[in-house]
Length: 374
Image 1 (cartoon, rainbow, N blue to C red):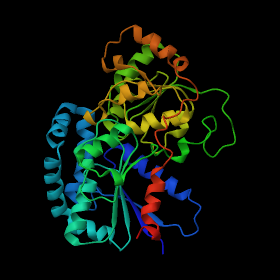
Image 2 (cartoon, rainbow, N blue to C red):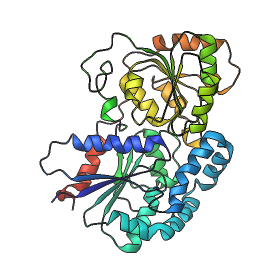
Image 3 (cartoon, one colour):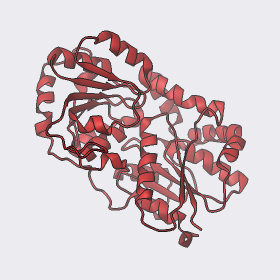
Image 4 (cartoon, one colour):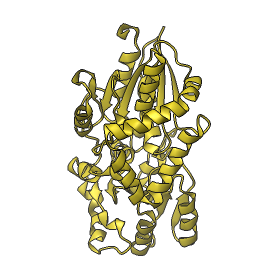
């Protein structure tokens, strides 16, 4: 009998849920007749535990409005000791509720795509002597927080050489380290000029600029939109503000009457990204890789939070984006005007993510779940 695979994520950042969905897509593509049951569980759901459930909202609030305190907390917890202490306390407080939620079975494979979650589950496994396999898939590109690492995992899965090196430095054994292609949802891997669920091919992009801020609606979104409206008053600008309802209402108020469309919370942005002439975003890993998979020109404005430090340099070095740091300021340099206009020509089309490995995360997880791995 094939094992049950549980994808453990957090909605604190939209990228974690996106990667969980991408791994589910990879597992679904496997043509084996005896497929595992695949479930997705938000470990930080408020219905599971109030303390755990409050952490995603705290993250979104800090990353969108108070990034300096967030960065300080990141620095203070970015060691195996401090992150381990926090995870130990959380596992003691929420351990019983987690066990009741998951109802662990022999042979289960838990695949973690959120920081701290692997540490919490590893402690529960050790204390409860529950026999399930545990793997972590690191979704960050360059700056890898210590909370991604836990001792004695069955697999450590990284999507960039930088992430793999960091996991090795934290103590991951080479035999259990895997370098894979970054997991991208199937909607972002299809023909970049065909809309989802439609046979109509796009003759030309119908959105001038798509402005993104991740699930938290973070980064210099208001400044970016203001600059675009001032420079290109006839251009169609579409803004995705994520969970940030306060930003959404402010944008509606500021740009009413302009050619600006502010979207409500949207789970799937692939259709908008396909139709965009140019995408402008903070340097979230999932956004970078999804835009690259669709071959869309991308400009990166800011690294919002220390987990994104190095992402802009990484994306520029790999030919996936151009640097638009000027958007971090309210007053824009005229030189950025030329960067925007020339960015589409500067990026080869269609540009694809760098291939560091032919292995995918789904294949590693499948190997853990197959009976031969017992």
